[in-house]
Image (cartoon, rainbow, N blue to C red; front, side, top):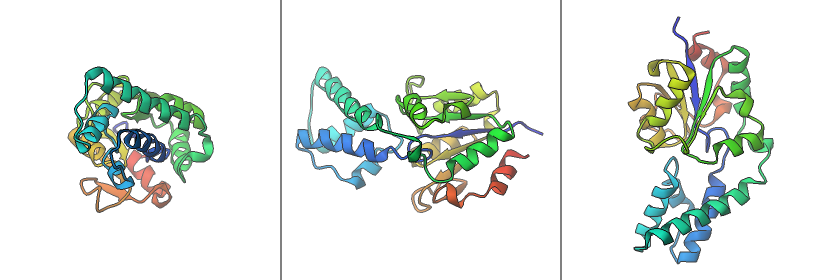
Length: 218
């Protein structure tokens, strides 16, 4: 039997911080006079903060100095951190604990693989740190998804071969990263968007433990 490892993205998979990202980006966009909608915010899913700001400035046709760019990056993050400061376990997405508890009870190694540099404080706020053998976040990676770097590091830390890893992702870039790594990709969200995923579920309420058991080869 091959040892399996499970890797979870954070935003939109375990907790929904997209709303906080949206509010922080919207605040900055309003300040800069750039129209910004929730639909546009969807394009920021799974994308690094730096790249998101580059895209926002492209939409606004703004060219700025590196120091100004860095200042806005920091401002957006400070805004976002103020929002997540209020997070509690109530913001864990439905039935995520069901899956995490099942895997923990069966000693299946789990990692977090997120582009967020705030992954650890968020996990701490919602009380999920003890579930993860490894937490790989934006402070440890140099290449953003769809590059598979974050998942390859996680697999290495779990000591599980990439082809034996199962990845849960809500972003197309994340699904592509998992596929590039040769991992089993499971999309959380809309089938019409996550077309490249091996399996797609609306959310964890649609996932039966029997399915998780089969994936883990228990």
